Image 1 (spheres, rainbow, N blue to C red):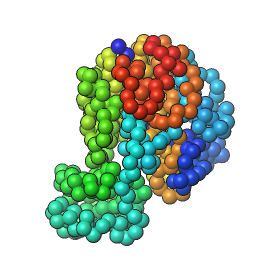
Image 2 (tube, rainbow, N blue to C red):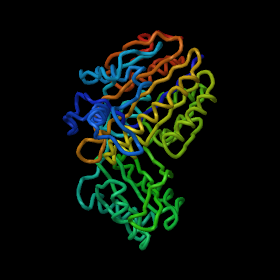
Image 3 (tube, rainbow, N blue to C red):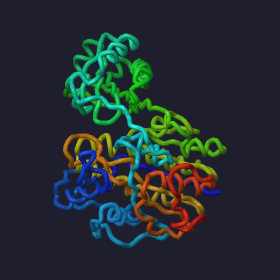
Image 4 (cartoon, rainbow, N blue to C red):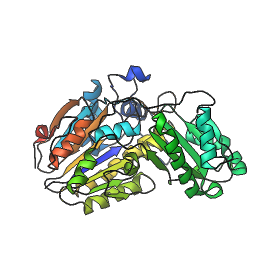
Length: 413
């Protein structure tokens, strides 16, 4: 039986979403705008990176062609020579929103057809009864923030008061999320996690997708720094996903990064986490070594989104893409006859765009498999086609959503 490896470059959109205007994102294009900035020298940074965007291994899988499929724009500078067994295309999201759970659930074969709950961009952002319940049931002296804000900015604004008062910093964004920042030492990491679990229960009736623990360290606004002990508390998927179908059959699903959190730890056999994209890549390589017949390794590389997209750091995003690309041959070398590797994304986060939030974009669907014919899979009308392709490759019966493109890339190796 085959194995499958699904790597999500968190927020690496390629523009062209048919409904981008509805989200205020018409024209957003994470890949194109990073590449444009690099070509014009606007992403040069001393001791980090220089010159045009250089991602030859993703280009050899058809990244440029995927971008052309998504937008109709040419990406000839990425080259046209593809490796044997490579396939390429793009996918349009049908789920509501442009958030992490919607994107990942849809990739795993379950589009989100309902509307998430959101908090208004007002001060205060949270309903008074929710705030009162958070304080009462979370046993805290109050909360700080209670508004829309970027994470690093709000910690700078309220971090010192948080240390002084013991009040957690609670904030939101245009996503269906309630984030809680607290100091790992002065407030306590375990206490933060426990408080988030209380809040998760309180926001369930409001259909809020995630409650996120955002721990930080440091003693002053100038030294505060978020740590990698983030934890997401997500709503469980309302139907079985690809992960549930695999584990129910007896296959092993290894979740790398925040995948387990996104799926409320359902359908997961084992979770492996690390701090940073490169450490995460090491975990993914180890999982590839350990995966057996019929198994799935599902990895998320979150730094593209949290460290560079939200912070509108074009040079940092470009350097992260180039660093990821340099590691890809190590993953290629671990592929056996019958394996399938797919690289994709869950949404966009154009670092040149206004604001600091995700952008509604199509995503790349590129990859390879020894023994496959490869080729052009075109524009997929839902991310769920990715999950259905993995399902067919691993010998599962078709699910309720999405259409496999497995036959288009050569069927079983």
